[in-house]
Image: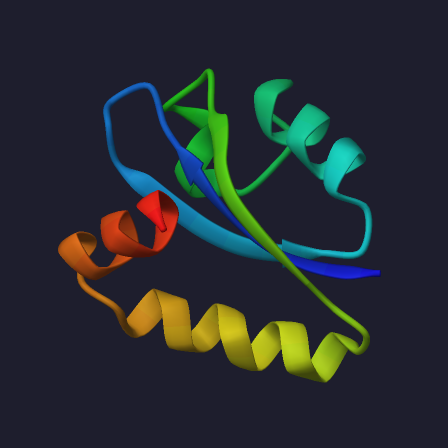
Length: 79
C-alpha cells in the first residue's frame, strides 16, 4: 500500500508526503526523524491520506498536491 498524506504541523502549516507505511512514517515524523521541514514543527497531526496501488501513482499525486495552494489543500482535507 502506497499512501499520500497531509500533515498539519504545530505552527499550522501543512506538509505533504508519501510512504508505504503510514503508521511508521507518522511515528518517525513525531520523533523528529521525518522530513527536515517537520522536525522543527512538532507535533504533527495527520489530516488527510489517500492510498494507491503503486509507488508511481502515489508520487504523482503527491506532486499534484504539493502544487496546490493552501486553500485548495484545505478544501481537499475537508471533503
